[in-house]
Image (cartoon, rainbow, N blue to C red; front, top):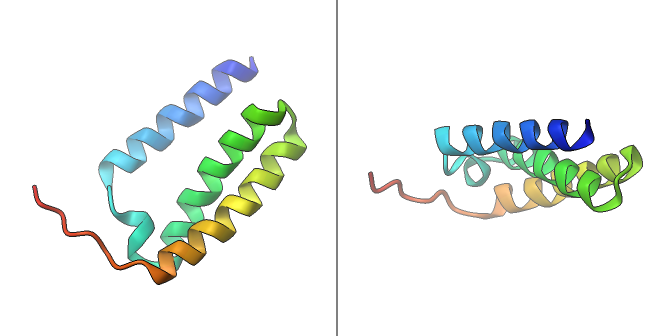
Amino acid sequence: MIRIVTALATAALVTLAAASPAAAQNNTLGGAIIGGGVGAVIGGAATNSAGGAIAGGVIGAAAGAALGSQMEPRLLLA
């Protein structure tokens, strides 16, 4: 059951990332949302517990917000 939920969450993140490839670098909120989601997935998978997912989400959100506020937006060459 946990593997199915993790796989669905990963698929959702990949879908969101494909829709807006530079969202994490455009602003602080986008970086926090994407960083928190990815951190929660990785933390939950690494520790196999809800506590690890929460800790990973908090750390990922903080790191994503810091990166999102400091990085310059990428140019989309499509």
